[in-house]
Length: 152
Image (cartoon, rainbow, N blue to C red; front, top):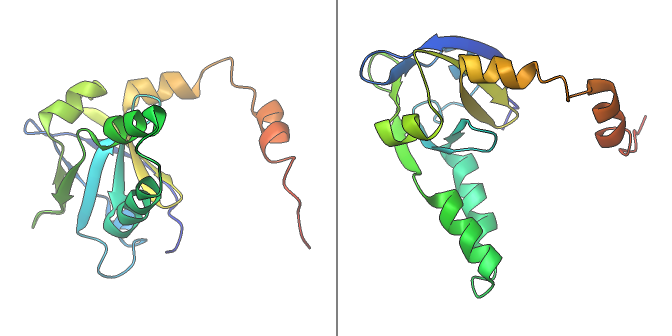
């Protein structure tokens, strides 16, 4: 799958629907532009998984030993609240009220392409997270990316 890119500000309507931007939708492979799984993510956001990406995540979870408490707990928490969603005829996706409440989504949201999935943030929460003075990008880049061996 081609990796997704972009950040999009969207508006939730009164029913909890948002328009999936065409620029983002066009980045998805043919046949993967309509059906997704929506779930709570890390850092107080939701994650919209294209169906094939979700299936890959499930395959990873299936490899966990469910006799180990941490693995069972992770699987339960990760899978709780996950639900299949589809793009409607007006190119909108409905976020159910339970998931909206878990991350306190308000009217303005940000869709953040994250490689093979899309994070959905409340706009104010996202901006606060992004402006966190404790995040030093230069140090973070050195610690995370500096360990990668670059091949020429």
